[in-house]
Length: 425
Image (cartoon, rainbow, N blue to C red; front, side, top):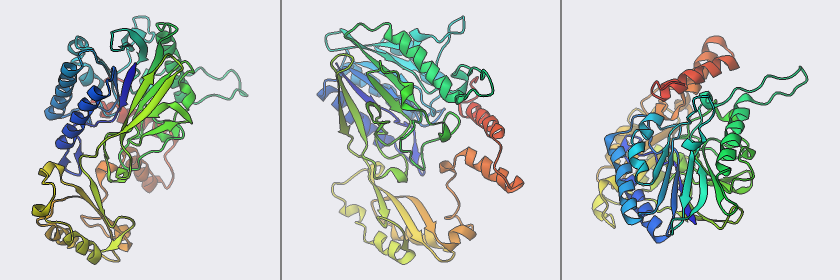
């Protein structure tokens, strides 16, 4: 059978104030066509379906319209959606009873049985090939919060080298759920696992990927996935990459750049052909980029005069070929070197941009003024600063020392509750 792995759609995201509905529509149209042309049997979306806990109605409409479209074109397609750290588990799962009837399994959070055990039935999803035969089982594990993890056993004595409790807990969750789902597999059926997490040895975008599960110091080792797993479909990191040298443990990456730092990424989805549990063929498929991100200069920084001249050299919107709707105009990222305050910079940039078929996304100022003077263009972009960094900086200012580990863990626990809309931890 053939499955397609994708993740981190971030439906409803604004890019520096610009809505991205047109970009998402272009990607979802391409994805629907690809599912048909590649004769895909199962689609796995590994988290961060939405960009926020409370996505706009337009984003929810895009998801449901996509599901309706692909189910009409591929009536036998199995669809698995898991929750990511940006998603509200409750909101994602709310239409679950309806979607189940259409072959769509949504897993926003882990469930437990009456006796406190992990509910494997809630995450076990059979995957069928074109003739309706079950060829694989998926352990659809969503983003794990600290409250999902079992407590780490205490050390037996002072000489006992205690494991990291978070990594131990995640490993135990995967061991238990993968074993339970593997018990459903026959000898010729593959075991698929999903995850929305940060793995050791992977490359993190510096701007747009939130720290999860206690911060990036808690990167997970690749051996949390048992050897019985034929393929692990990961989400959270936006750069497509394999993990720990294992070809079958992969991030598909996001479908297009979600921050200016990701403009050089080669965005893709992953085709996975399963010929039994151990025979797996992986084929990355590049995703056409619906909107480009232009940078002036292409690398490094340039003086204000050179940046303004380069902007004026951009084509006029009436010279654009082909003619694009405004929602698909390229974004513009400027990197300006300045030796002093530039109070008129934004005004000069906007004047130079008059009539140009681009959208100004970001201005970075580098130089003495950016370190000492506070101007509208030198203020940090708060959307790109993680709350934990603000907390740590404020603590250092007040106490001239790094915050203790216990304080950071308490802050992360509070932040997690806030980010998940007050859902119980």
